[in-house]
Structures are given as structure tokens and as C-alpha cells.
Length: 449
Image (cartoon, rainbow, N blue to C red; front, side, top):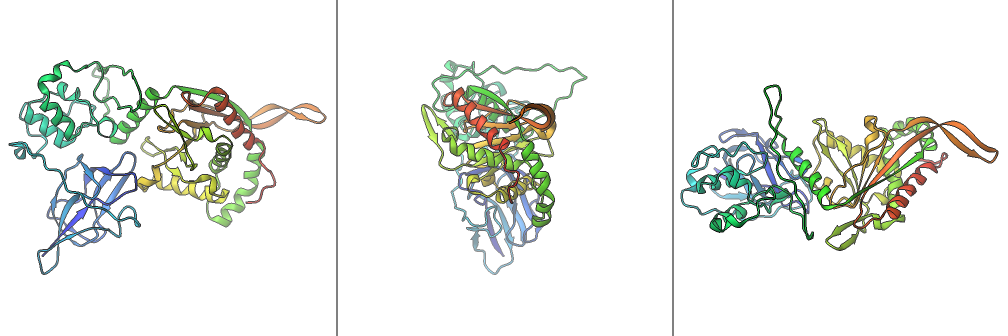
């Protein structure tokens, strides 16, 4: 028999690790080619890892909730063969990105006497229960904490340097090594507050413990909701938010879409929604005002060359994800429409790839889909602005004509722009928002698509 080492496949240029959320196969199970072995999650996207070979799952090298680096061996599969050779998956044809090779890294081994006896995260050494916390800890970190006799309160005070402030193996080992001097640590800041780089100071609220009675229900946040919560808190802490509003008369836009939508669906086999029309106007305005298409690093403003529009999408479970349309300014209206529909469908089906949510430079959200007339969205870091559109409503409005003013029924819509006041002042933010509205109001009613 031969042993097949299954590596965690590469999931995108900027993705270096993933969390195992669930094993779908257990040791001893027969696995067919293309069977899904496990489910993994990056910062935003959940994915499945299939088996490229047929065989029997011999060993799981990581457990659920553990973080795995790209290229690490996650499982050993016993396949039919004549020799006991180790076959390593260097490039899986069915990996999460079909055009990029994976790379191998050596797993770090923790050398702590007696730690190998704590393979089960539920083993008790100190009696501390690390499950009664809203902060995420990997099984490895919990095992080290138990072995070193750390209480839950002490563990919660450790400053994490991992993704979204998570405590890594190096963090807890460093804490243990300097435990005697840790009495002087300032505990006024919660350890799970996101780490904000390039900022001289930050103010973090203390943790609030809510008291519930027998009529209340405690609902633990899932992994994605925790990430969203940390991301939103970090954004508000790092960026002074300012919000501007305009009201746009989008009557020409609405009438044009009503005129072309049936023919478009017959020709393309899919609907044309308002979203690509809004995104096209945003990309035009960003080209007019490139200092809105930026990010901030300390006291440096990074002006982005690419215009990559993030499209906030609500998932069936109530969570939010922001897939990105890359180089949106280079796409035709048909190309934008197809990209919007594709990303929306794959978001709802949980089929996004990690690269689909990376490298956004500006975010658009349609709160009008829920009947809201306006809103003040939170900036999607590290971007500097986010635009929201409300529902389109028929209203009586003043219409200026060469014969004088008159009252008419028009399709009106509010647009709001939240922007980072560190780099975008009211004049720039307000002018940019008005330019987006102008592009929508002056839509060509005779445009061909």
C-alpha cells in the first residue's frame, strides 16, 4: 500500500492559512476520488477540500478549530500501491484555485514535556474551563494553558498577534516565559481587541459582562459573525467616520432598465439588476476623484491604481460577505452585470474562493434591497470609503423645464457615503458623492446594451 499526503491547497495569493471547521470523513472511512474530506474557513470564505485520490483515510493531522498553514499536511490517505512510498500532493488538480501550485512548509513541533498527553482538548489539568469565553482559542493554545496552569481570566489577558487578535502559540509561550513579570501588564485593555498598526494611541472599551435571567436566550456567535464583529469594531476605532447624503432623481435609469431588461434576459439568459448600473457610476466617479480610491497606512495615503469594487452581499444565514469585482472600470456594462450575478449566486451557494473577497479598494452596499431609504455604513478596512444606496421610491418632485417649474412623479433615491476623515475631507467626499448621483441622473435613455 502507498501513503498519500494531502496538503492544504493554496487558496489565493494573499491567503496563507485557514481554520479547519469540520471533518466530514473519519479515520478508517473509505474515500472515493473527489469526496470532500474536510471543510475549512479563511477570514471570510468557507471552502471544501476534496480528495484527489481513492483510498482509506488513515490519519487526521489536525483537529477541528485548529489553524493550518497553506502547504501543511492535513491528512494521510492509504491508497492502493506496491510500495510504501510517500506521495506528496504538490499541485492538486481539484484544489481551490486550479491554476496555482501549492507549496510545502514544515509543521512546527511544540516541545513541552508532558504536552503529548493532552491530545484531547477536553482533558483537565488545572480544572479551568476555557469554553466559557467569547474569544477564540485553538486547541493547541488551550492545551498549553492547561499544562501551564493558566486560569481563564489570565488567558483572556494575553495580547494576541494572530489574525483578528487571536492568541498564537508564540504569544502564549512568550507569556509563560515572562509570567513573573506579567504582573506589571496594563490590563485595562481587553486582550481580544484588534491590533491596530501605525496608530500612536487607541482607546478600547472594557469588556462588559451581561447578566441574563431565565427568560433570556444566549446565542453564541458563529465564526463568521465573530470575524465581522471584530472587523467592524476595528474600523470604528481606526477611522473617524463622516457620512454625507444626496438625493438623486433616477427616473431615466429606471425607465431605461424597464425597457431593456426583457430583451437582455432573452439574449444573455440572466437578469440585469440595478447593481451593475450603480457600480458603473461609482467606477466613473472614482476615476474622476482618485483620492477616494485609497487606503491609509499611518500617515501615508496609498492611492490605488486598480479600481476593485466590493459588493456587500447578505447570506441566507444572516451574515455578510463582500466579494470583489476586480478592475471594474475596465468592464462593460454586460461584463459588470455578469460579474455581479456570478458573485451573488456563488455567495449564496457558499462557493466563493478566497481570492473573490481580496484586494477591494472601495465598497458598495444596496440597503434599498431591504426597503431602507438610507443608512450610514461602516467602512470596510483598509479602504477609506463605502457607498450605500437606498430604495427607489416614487415621489412628487419639482421638475425644471424651459417653460418653468412643474410638479411630477419621479423615481427618487438617497445615496450615502461614509468616508475616513483622516484623508477625505467633506469637500472631497461630498463632491465625489454628488458626481455618482450626477452619472445616475444623467443616464442615457437611448443607450444600447
